[in-house]
Image (cartoon, rainbow, N blue to C red; front, side, top):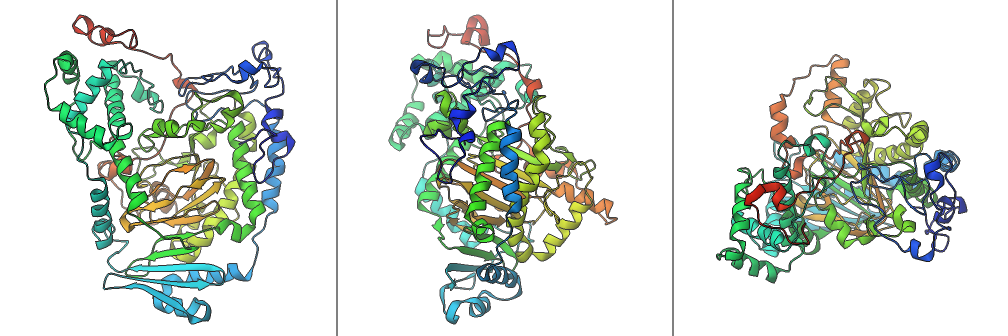
Length: 640
């Protein structure tokens, strides 16, 4: 993000890109914005003010940031009408476009290694590629073979999982490694789920303590069609239940949780009337069933497993194959640097920094990013409500989808269209970003395409060739062109995203998605629970994963961090196949629902925030009396 002159980023920043300059210019577009003070015009007291922004609430006047606006659907304070985007972004794009792949001997050796993975056994490959024909067999059983060796300055680990077949219906869940990983995670966590009785008790305590005043935008990412409900009270109790789960799992110690469990089983006259109200509004589906997932418990269990269970494979190159030598997962640390050099990698980060300064990007969707409110608590620098005006450009969490796809409910790709974020249809004031988007796509997404190609093309050439043909047959004007040989029709741009454990069920079945990570962060291991492993995933790394069936998540980190996911949707492939005259057996919508499109199944839900400026509405608050009429308890002064 733009920095103050006194605190430039490691890769340097031109003076024109510092916060001092960007927030130091008057906005003369109309009388209203002409009154907004620049950063330098604020008094010391005004500079220390916080609470300038409320997440999920539109703000178009920010003292000290004349061009800043905060759309209700956005995860960043943006500057879409600041014409300086036309001066700042093009030179960055030109630098990236000039960056060519460095044809080094080391890169050629890495390409050869990747290309040979599917053609031979891990032992034969180690003998072929290892320096001095020297390698170490870390493990050799009937179920897996793990070998380490050196490739020049790079450390390599190859893992052949003989009990995995990527084409099986559920290839990863029941392997010895997956079962052991799940078992160890449960031993470390070792706490039962919240019973219905316990949930109701914690909800009642929150109401009793004046912490139950909620509004429909309490989790702020819900699409408008889900927010507007005939029974607003139901929505409020959904929020209250989520708040209770968060409070129990994330704001209490293990000892405190045990104490609350005991208290919940005892009768409390003080809570009796509140519990009657809660039970009267209890949904039948809140039953701890398979579709009623406690996101916060899952988050805590995964966080503990990431710290104490999953093995850290700290190798420069790590590749996992199945019994037929098909790639399951691979990670190449510093892949972007190996290909383009550190200057281009730094410039990619700078491009994403500045693009997310000017362009409003959507908040992460609720279901996959349920704990974002908690993340803002443990990383207050990401909470726009709690920082001063000169820190607002850093307080951002967003996920934008750039490319094309089909509607939810159209798994066969009958109609493929450009995504909302690539069409700039969420608001009407993005003409500068929209005008520059083709250049952004070629420069930034084009580099991401090249980096992901290194792994995808070499590790699965058949899949890569099919993706190239699919892209060619997607509708012109809807697909986003980034490269001379595009193979990805969808990119997800992640800005300080804290993605929970999930699968990308919309991706091509058994396909490979590329995951590229950038920025100036620490931590943030990429975890693959069913494999029982995590990799460092440092800035510049690129991983590929069969993400439609393989769970994955990123552990906690200190931002700023950016990510680009390079992928394709199954519906796009089906659309293109029909255009190519290839036989396609249609998938029923109900079958796709079974894969997890229904709400409440977080590991499998698509990560899309569908809100726009059209969804802006006044905040709605309820007190106990407004919800329940004369029967309700009187609210405390805190909750009124």
